[in-house]
Image (cartoon, rainbow, N blue to C red; front, side, top):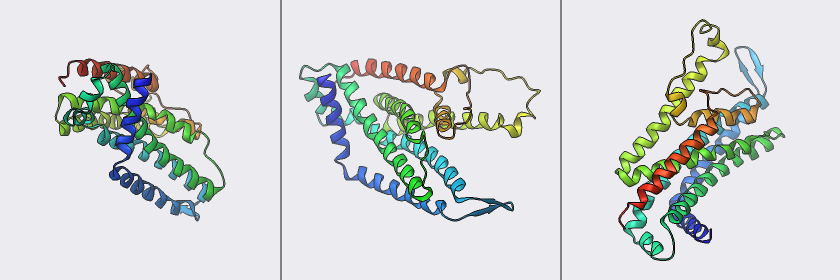
Length: 268
């Protein structure tokens, strides 16, 4: 654990000392602060009066999903080529020349990337919570807990990008990783809309068949939908027989095992 903590701390320091990290965080917080305009005033939609509190609630839910999805892109940028950079500048050779196993090195490196990526997301979600409190006088229970749950998606993205960047060029690794997540968002969103109250009656006579992808494909979007249910206390939409958190945990274990196995064969 001592080696693990040292490598994780080294990775965190290495990431946050770059000015580009703070530039991305500052720009993201600036765009989040632009939502303050949605929290003031009343609105009329189709002749019906909608209070500012209701608009603020919906705006916060939308912001939650945008931030959670956007953080996956940030995690991709931070993780892309992380192991190759250490190899090129000799950091990995220096670290592994000491009594440090390759497993400890990989685990510490992934932990550092995960912590920085998650904190990026958590700070933005915390900003939304603060804006909501000061503009509506109320808090959104479960908002930060939902953010913690979405950290599983961030960990999965960090692992997948790190694995693919070891065997593919950076562009191909990023494209494939984002593509896997994009398929999850598209398919899960379509399934949720198709099973909404608006279309449920039209599909009542159709038989629902479980597809293989509902079991094995990473349910990144479904986990975000489940996290949303922690905020609005609604009935979560579940795709397939496995809970999305279990699905993501299984994917994390598989990708982590593949990453360690692949790095064991890496020549330094």
